[in-house]
Length: 123
Image (cartoon, rainbow, N blue to C red; front, top):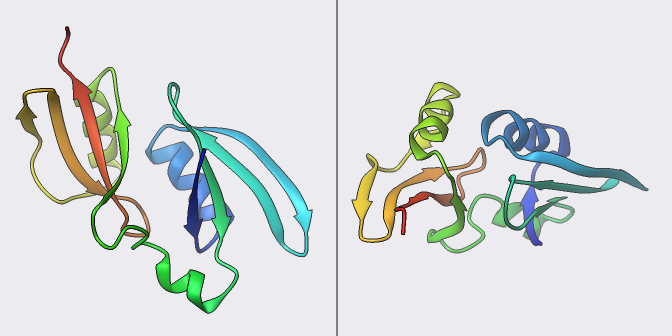
């Protein structure tokens, strides 16, 4: 599981569930406004959505890896997921391209973090 610092739990849940088609695995109140929120794609790892709780953390939201691609989301149906995300208003950094390993496109999540959407070629 990887932590993703977010501005707001509910907006992040809505984005990852509705736009990226992740499942909400857990949303447990921890007191004092904190929650343990876990979302995950159908296959692979999970994200722990952690609301920023200090000015230093807030400054890192959307730039958690210094502008590099931070996360890699593999899909079994690249074009279906790409079109769904496009219809939901996801901002892409480029047009989809073919690489030796598959079809890929860089996109930004709701906070500006860079992701790769990857559809691997059949082996």
